[in-house]
Every structure is written in C-alpha cells, then in structure tokens.
Amino acid sequence: MDVLTVTALRKRFGPVAAVDGVSFSVAAGEVVGLLGPNGAGKTTTLHMVLGLTLPDSGTVEMFGHDMTRDRTRALARANFAASYLHLPAVLRVEEILDVYAHLYGLRRPAARVAHMLELLDLGPLRRQQFSRLSSGQQTRVLLAKALLNEPGLLILDEPTANLDPDAADRVRGLLIEQAALSGRAMLITSHNMREVERMCDRVHFVSGGRIVATGNATELAGAYGVDDLEAVFLRVARGGAAA
Amino acid sequence: MTTLAHDVAGGVARRRRVAGIVRRDFYATRRNGGRIVEILFWPVLELVIWGFVSVFLRANNVPIAVSVLLGAVLLWQVVGRAQGDLAAMFLHDVWSRNLLNVFVSPLSLGEFLAGHVIFGAALLTANSLVMSGLALLLYGFGITTIGPALVPFLVLLVAMGWGLGMVAIAVVIRFGESTQSIAWVLAAAFQPFAAVFYPVSVLPPAAEALAHAVPASHIFEGMRGVLAGQGIDWSGLAVAAVLDVLLLAGALTFLAHALRHARRTGRLSKFGE
Image (cartoon, rainbow over all chains, first blue to last red; front, side, top):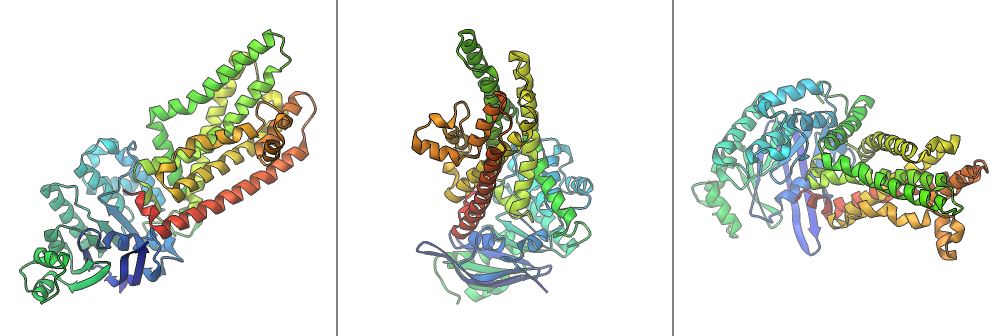
C-alpha cells in the first residue's frame, strides 16, 4: 500500500520550471531517495509534498488524503526534518518537544517526550536551550521532534548535512533501526551517496525538475555502466544518459 | 492515526494544538529576559512621561484633566501591546527558522491564531495590571474611574489591536521578512487618527473622515465623555464594534490570502532559509 502518491507535479517560478512533471510513490515501510544536483527540484518537490508550496498542477496524496483538501489529516501522520530548519532558539529541549507533542495532538505528551529524550539520548540535554547545542545535538532534537508522533511517513531533507561522519552514521543507524521497528516509510534527499546506498530501497534521480532515472543502487549503477551511485550522480549532474 | 494521538479532527486534538502554541509563547517569553523588559519598558516610560506632563499642566492651571491624559495612555497601550505581541510571537518563529516546522504540523491557521491570541490576552492582562497599579501609585489615578464602560472599551481596543496584529503578520507573509518592521509601527501609524489625546474635531477634514473609520477614535471620544460625566455613548461604542468586526474580517481574509499567495509563489519556503 502506498503512503504517498505524487502525480505529474509541476511548479514554475517565473521562467524557470523548478519541477516539471514529477511522479513517484512511496510504499509503507519503503525508504525512497530523491537525488540530484543543487537546483534540480528536490526541495521544491518535498515542499509541495508537505503543502508548503502549492503545485501549478499535479496532485499529492498522502495516506489517501489529498493534500490540497485534507492536509491536516495527512500531516498528522507524517513529519519532517531538514538540515536548514531550526527550532525556537530560547526554548529548552524538553520544552520544544512538549510544544510539538501538543501540536501533534498526542494523548500523553509528557510520557512521549520522556521516551523521545531517552531514545535520542537527550536526557542530559533536556534543560539546555536549543541555541546552546552543537550541530549534532540540534540534529538529534530535530529528529526527536520528527519522530514524536511516530509518523508513518518521515520526510527528511539532507538530514545529516551538518554532521560529522560519526554523528551522521549514528543518525543513519537510528533512522534505519526505527523505520524497521515501526514499518515507517521515509522519503529522503541527500548529497551523501553512501548514505543513500545504505538507507534507500529505491532512488529517483532528479535533474532539471524531472526524474531521469529510477532504481535501486545496483540497478542504477548497472544502467549507467558505473561502479556506484556516486558515479551515477556525476553522470546525471553532467547531463549523461544511461548506457 | 494510532492510539498515540487523539483524532486529528476532534475537539481534544484541536484544543491540544492551540495549547501547544500557548505553551510555546509562554516558554519563549519566560526564557527571554529582553522581551519581558521590552513588554514593560515602553508602556511604563509613556505612562511616566505623560503623567508628569499632566501634573505640570495642572500645576500651571491649564484646564486639562489628569484622568483624561492618563486614561488615554493606559488604554492606548492596550492597542499597541495587543498588535505588537501578536506580531512578535509570529516573528519569533520566523527568526528561529521554526516557521516551516509549525506549518508542516497539523495545526490550522485558526488554531495558530487562537493560541497566540490566548497567550497575548494573558500577557496584556498582566501588563495592564502593572500599568494601572503604577498610575494609581504615582499619580493617584485609578483606571476604574472610567466606570463600567471600561470593559467594552478594553474589549474593543484589544480587538482592534489583534486585527492590526493579523494585518502585520499577513504583510510579512505576503511581502517577506524585509517588511517585519511593520510589526513595531502599525498601531503607532493609526495613533494620530485614533483621537487618543485630542478630539476628532481638531483634525483637518480629510483626517477627520479617516479618524471616523478607526475604531479607537470612537472609544477615546467615549472615554473623554465618561470622564467629563456625560455618561456612556452607546452609539459610539456600537460604531466601534462594527468597525472592529470589519477590521477583523478584513485582516483574516488578508492573512488567508497572504498565506495562499506565499504557498503559490514559494515564498513560504523562503522562511526556512
């Protein structure tokens, strides 16, 4: 069963076609990657999926709910984290999670916040203000917020972009483990090809606002006659086609 | 949804989401010493200055009632604070780059505003109590001198402040962060036409016509009438109420339009950068 169905999504900003007929789906429990060079249309696509940006045409259906008509029901079952987003700087970690536990209408906010603090190893930081945390710690808080409502679909825009390799590896491990435990689907953008190879069941390469290649890492490498996703990325970014 | 959360469309979930915004505002205000100082500093400064001006004028036998000036200062700060607090609480999410997190939650625009308005009302009550206490302590002026008309005066002024606050938020969403200074100046821009310290009749004809369209002008005219012992001008209050309803309806429409526009043009996403 698909938790997300994106059909013929288009978006122009002035003369630029940021997204030009993108269609894909994400099944329950599936981890899908959206890859492509800067300006390819990945973030615009994610923002249309989340209802932050309205498409010129096309549809987004999340958990069977049309995002233009019933975004509240859809968003209650999803969540989002991005490396470029922050949380209220002056709030303590436990206060931030308490606020979002309420915004997602959780039944027992305090218990859920305590669970997330433990899961993300944030207990010692619970009384720290967000602005005083390191990048790695901030990312963990963002992920705690994103996992609060046990989303059936987790959307992540370059989730490990600000992290050192060790912290990034821990975050990836946590996300994979949590997704496997709950059967959660994930839609991820990343410029880290190893991350994508490790996490994603399926990858869509986006270039010039269009999906130009789809498959798992092995299939894509084979299609482009190269060894790995990194080489596929370079071929796509430089306008090359599959072999 | 799972048993982890209440039904997203149910009353409990809605109240919980509103409570989430109230809690966010409470935590943010409590943790921001500068904001607490700012919330009290300007109104207290204005009260002190106008208080001493009125004392000076009275000492020089200028025929002006201290109560009129201090009543005007106390009531006008209600408009300024209601507008400024509502806009500032929204801007806090913009400055924190948190706005997109809020907008990808199941929160509706109405719930978002309701939460800010509830916390704003609590903040305004605390602020007004401090100001009224100071006016009594320093100048012997009790705000209750205005009598039972004080309640509708306050309600109508708060409504005007919130209407202007929504307009300020809508302008920032519609035109971008560079317009955020409107949050600090919008209420002040209406003050010359609000008849706060002088009657509408002293204004030039064009300005007088404009003043009649400002809800606060009818309230301050009414306040002066009450303090002069003329009783409550109910027709003036009714006009102010109608103007407030029009302002709030217009502000909500503008805000909804601004949000749609920001989603259509991709401007909303820019608040995450």
